[in-house]
Every structure is written in structure tokens, then in C-alpha cells.
Amino acid sequence: MPTDIAPHSHHKDARNFALRAVGWSLGLFSLVRLSWFETNAVVPLTQLQSRFAESVFGRPALPIDVTLACSGADAIALCAAAILAYPAMWPTRLVGAAGGIGLILAVNTARIGTLGRAAASPALFQALHLYVWPAVLMLAIAGYVFAWMRLADAPRPRIDVDPFWRRFVILTATFLVLFTAASPFYLESATVLRVAALIARAAAFGLGLIGMQAVATANVLSTSRGAFLVTQECISTPLIPVYLAAVFAYLNGWRPRALALLAAVPLFVGLGIARLLVVALPPALIGSPLFLIHAFYQLLLAATVVFVAAFWRHGAGATAWRRAVIGAAVGSLVVYLLSPWYTHALTSVVGSAHLEDPQGAIALLPAFQLGLYVALCATAFVALSWRFFAGGLAMLALSQIAVFAVLNIVAGHGGFTPHVRDVRAWALAGPLLLLAAMVTYDRPRR
Image (cartoon, rainbow, N blue to C red; front, side):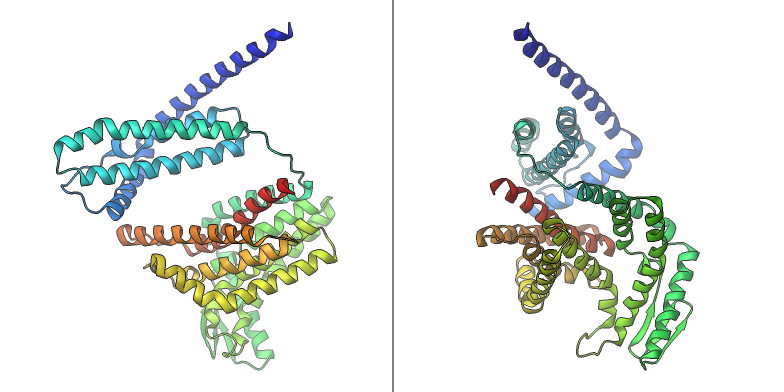
């Protein structure tokens, strides 16, 4: 009978969810107790929380022993198991699990900090440690999980995405992961180093043609404005996986793809040469050619992102080209006019991160993200309310404040310095994620 189908289906779904939750719980609890995982993940995470707690709440009133039991790993496993077992789309589950992990780490850090401050009072310490904080942590997990489940079940308007863009995004993410994973191989490759030496010689020849004295010795380019070492890292740009994703997403048939793949070698060798030719720019235009050489691929990738956003939002045509040029021009103008003021305002709130920054990637981060955000907004949206734009700008500023605050704390207590590749990747990813959220929110309202 039809009246029996729905209850039977609900019981079956509930049973399957419970079984999956038990399976995920057992698997995650077993994972966090593996000696290798404890040594390489749980212990560093516990130490990081302890340092954060001390930075926020101050030094403990009495010395306390922050052990693995204080890590919050079991709470994370429990929360993640419930979310990963729930019958929702996998991207929704992964985002929910990431949010739950962040919430638990924040609550657990506050727990460690308050327990440290209460250490001078044994009665208060025991009450907080045994009763108050376990209850707070469980309520926070339960509240978050139920709120996430309700959000995951909420109906959403269907957003039609062009198949090309879907393939392009998926392939770009896949190739970027593979590109990063393979970095130990190409960053130590003698063949790639020989290509770097070839690029240095070609750049010296090109500079000589325009009347600038330049000599290449092995992979070192020496000019009147200084010597520049060309390494494997200098020519290994993230534009390579983006280019490969475009080839496999846009071109059909093995012949066009083969020709495009063959063209990749001279294309990126040419870009490597062009990157070194910036030393020929007059000092009045660019004070330090080394800074521009290091940021060359980051700026080029930002321009590529703006043009891709234009084609994504407006299709292949004159409108897309016009919007891309306008967006790039407006973003560049904003950086030129406002970057000193904006960077000063931001660093006055959180302070400047005491980190090694030989390439200037951290110093460039605030102004670069501001310019890229403005460029993407001008490119992607034909009409954008000031309130909507200001809300996105506020989110960008808050994310930058959070990033610099974390860098300051970690640098001050752990001596941690982020890799310049990670800084440049976040410089691009932050505004892109914000644009994706704004487009997703903007479409259903129209």
C-alpha cells in the first residue's frame, strides 16, 4: 500500500544512517589512535592549540599538562562521523565536516585557555574540566550537526552550469592537486634545471638585442640591475595545470589536444623568458625588478582569472572581452591608488607578521587581493549593489585580518613560516572563493 512506503523508507534511511555513522566513528576513532597519526597529526595539533590558548588567554596561573586527551581529536572524530554518514552530496558533507572541525578546535582552544587560567583554584579547575567544558563541547557538536543537517536538507534553487565550465573547474582542481603532489620531482629535476639555464641564456640574448648588458652563466642571469638565479621553482608555474585543464575541457579530439600539448613547451618557455625581461623596465616604472620577477606568474594568473571569469559570466564574445579589460583596469587602478592606505589600515589592526618574506608575497597579499576582488566584481557583475559589494569587501578584509592574526601568533610561538607558494595560492584563492559565493547567492535572487 502507498501509505506503507514512506514509513518503511524513513525507517530504512534511519537504519542506514545509524550503521554508516557507527562505521565512520569506528574508522575515525581507530585512525586518531594510530601511533603514526598521533605523532604527526594529533600531537602537533594539540601543541598548536596550546600556543593559541596561551596567546589569547595568557599564561596559565599554574603549569598544566596539555596531553593528547586535551586535543579534541575524539570530538572531531565524532562530529565528522555524523556528518560524513549523513545522506547529502559529498561536497556538502566535506564542507560541513571542515566547519565542524574548525568549530571544535575553536571551542577546545578556549577550553584549554580557561582551564589554564583556572589552574590556581583546584575546585574551579575540576568543575570546568570534568563537568562544564565536556557539556559545552557536546552541546556545541550536537547543535552544529543538527543545524548542518537542516541546512543540508533545505531545498536549493537549481543553478544550470555550462558543461565546459564544470569540466574546466573539476580538471583544474585535479591537475593543481597533481601538480602540487609532483613538486618534489620537478623541483629537484636536472632536466628542468637545464631548461631554466636555457631560459636564462635566451633572456640574456633578448636583453642584448635591446641594448642592455646581460650575461648568462649556467642558470644565473647577470645584468646591470643585479644577478638573478633561475631555478626549477622559477619556471614551475600553476598556469601549467590551468592550461592543461583548458586543453582537455575545451578541445575535442586527440589531434587538437596533441597540438595544444606540444605548444605548451614553447609557450611556457616563452613566458619564462618574458618574466626575466622585466629587468629592462626603467627604474622609474618599477623600483625593484626582483619583486616583479617573483610576482610575475601571480600577476599573470590573476589576469587569466579575470578573463576566464568574463567568459564564464558573459560567454565568448565582445562583451566578455570588454568586461575583462574594464575589470583589469579598474582593479589595477584601485591597487595603484589605495594599496598603501589599505595595507596600512589592515596592518594597524593586526600588526605586521614577523615572518621571513624574501619575495614580498606576504606584503603584497592585502593589496593584491583587494585589486583582484574589485576586478572580479567589475568583470562578473553587470549590475552590483553597493551594499552587496561592501559586504563582500568586508568579508575579504575579515579573512585577511584572520590570516594575518594566525600568522602573527604562529610565527611568534612556533617559528612557522608559510611557503611562498602557499601565500601566492591563497592570494588568488581568497577572492575567487568570495566571487563564487557571491555568484551563488546572486543568481537565485534575480
